[in-house]
Image 1 (cartoon, rainbow, N blue to C red):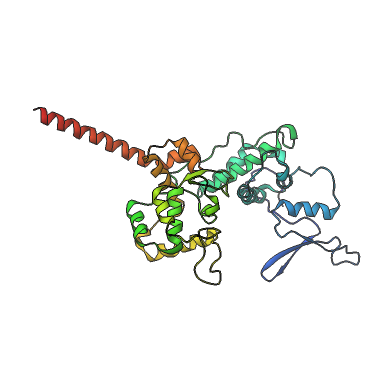
Image 2 (cartoon, rainbow, N blue to C red):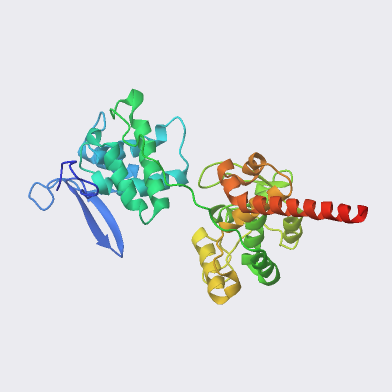
Length: 361
């Protein structure tokens, strides 16, 4: 295995620590710690948590090894372990969504440099990795960079686990146009044809602007003084989404019962809440059957909700509070609608001036 930084972009692979072995059973992976396995002096067999990328897994490994005291951070992989183990003690708590995001993208960093010295990591190495990923997937490259940057900021300073920030000066890829809003024709098609739970999800998404992961959680108990108030699963932010008359009229037709609004209607899980993945599958099915819905995604309704609020005179900051997205994202989603509205206003002014001129003459 390569242990030099010279020319390395993705040269080291993650491997299980000594005395840890994997057992496959029933299509699942199980992990155990056993010192001296398959020898006359084998130690006790200790079951470990199932995900080797989780902080709990590495805490259990250290306990099984009988290690106490400071966690080693001399390699990039060890630094990642130390960072993940420290999550519960951070002054600013990470949401479950953020933890899942960091775990996923720090795995890319571990695969690239896991066994290499952490303090030898340089911006040139980070840039090479980000450019390699970004050549095809700029969004993924940004996520990797953000996760690595969060870890490095935790490690430098008073903790003195890193001498310098290797992400310094490495730029993110520019934000694209974002997810496209549903067109007026697509919205009308959904208004006229959607039925059952998919219709509920559509109206909730269109008029609250929440992600699919939050739509499946919304229920009557989340109503607070005429609006929805629910901490977002991804960010932990608690927006307050007003219940507009269009949504209120639709909700009046729903049966009154406890629990989330969206329940599965068919199959063995009928009556159980939707998962985000199941909600996506339902939309995928509709898209494959109806050409009118080509290209629509649940996230596009976040753009529709933002545009609807902007057209009703709300500022980007107010929309940010109501929908729970950054002001920059709101501006990006509303840019096309703002330009169109501005152009139409100019056109009206020109027509009015021409009309006044004609009347005077």
